[in-house]
Amino acid sequence: MEFFTFHDFMTYTKGITYLVMGAILIFMPLYWLYLTDRDD
Amino acid sequence: MVAQDQPMEKSSILTPFNVITSIILFVGVILMFLRFTRGIGAVTNLDNNNPWGLWIGFDLLCGVALAAGGYVTSSACYVFGLKRFHSAVRPAILTAFLGYALVVFALNFDVGRPWKLPYPIFVSQGTSSLLFEVGLCVFLYLTVLFVEATPAAFEWLGFKKLRTWVVRLTLVLTIFGVVLSTLHQSSLGALFMIVPSKLHPLWYSGYLHVYFFISSIFAGMSMVIFEGSMAHRWLHDKMDATHLAQSDGVVLGFGKAASFMMMGYVGIKIIGIAVDNNWHYLSTGWGAWFLLELIGFVLFPAILYGMGAREKNLTFIRIASLWTVLGIILNRLNISVIAFNWQLPSDLRYVPSFMEVGTTIFIITLGVVVYKFIVTRMPILYEHPDYKEEH
Image 1 (spheres, helix red, strand yellow):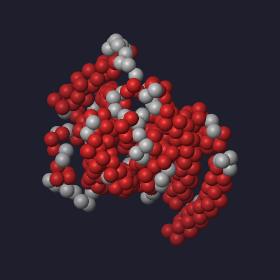
Image 2 (image 1 turned 60 degrees about the vertical axis):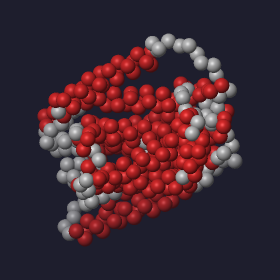
Image 3 (image 1 turned 90 degrees about the horizontal axis):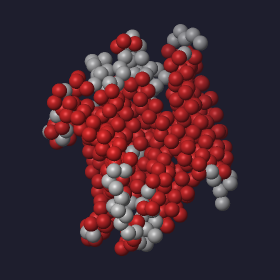
């Protein structure tokens, strides 16, 4: 990926970061359920 | 049957433990003499490129991270009210106190002139420096840990009034400990934000302080589990029924919490790569080393912790605890030594001298000996019969 302006860089990195954060927000509650669903 | 009810056994002083530790301590005293009489250059490979080496990277950074079990366990028990972890509090506080005491002891080897150690706190405060903040927090937290550890000593010595006074302070001390730990655990990471050109981009991040703080939490939990496993193996006879009954719950509870924290940590590390757009470094040799640390020593033990917590498999959790402790050591050494000055030619890179390694082994051994001395005498792994049911 080539960047010509700082705006290009921020748009790209922020876009990827938001996608990663979205994935984490979905994954972490599911992982918590995995950890706790056999608790008494 | 608890430890103090057992008859004293007449055993030889020449046990393998005593012989090996005596040799290490003897060599360590010689190294200490060399360090303080001939200077830091005589015993270390430090230079102007690498002013911080193994003593800071391992003794200080790893020591502080692995001593985090104290604030994690005491806050779980007294702040969050998880009383089922109560039996783990005293061993965790003792380990944390010894850990921090040895951090300060080891710091003297690095900075020299021990009589000037109080100067940054009492004489010449550098209030704009992160090192001042770390120093102040460690000074205050070591004091807090000392006070938190005194009830066991007072019970052992029979000082009932003093013990009662200190126990009344438990909640205040715990909150103070959490605040101080949050500050200095993160500040140790923030220290490295001053070297963006020296630390490899995969480890350098604007979130270093967050990484250090979050990783200290699961480092502390892992150390409590690991240390508990060691105590079970070697000091089983010193534990009372309550401690034995609660220990499985501590392992399972901390294993589950550590697993969740570590998964979150992996997530924020990926966010760090995304924010700085460092993806291209992952395909390099340094990237492979970074992935080994993140996947091999965080993600895999997190999964093992998770499987252990779900299946109630204590062996999985105990293996994962050792794995995580090694991962924390690798992470702190990567940041302070291995990935530090990564652009220097190999002949200018820092490799610790055998005397630095020997001094580190000496300090760890000193900690183990003092821990054993205290645990075999004071009510750490059992409740003193005069104070049962007081919690």
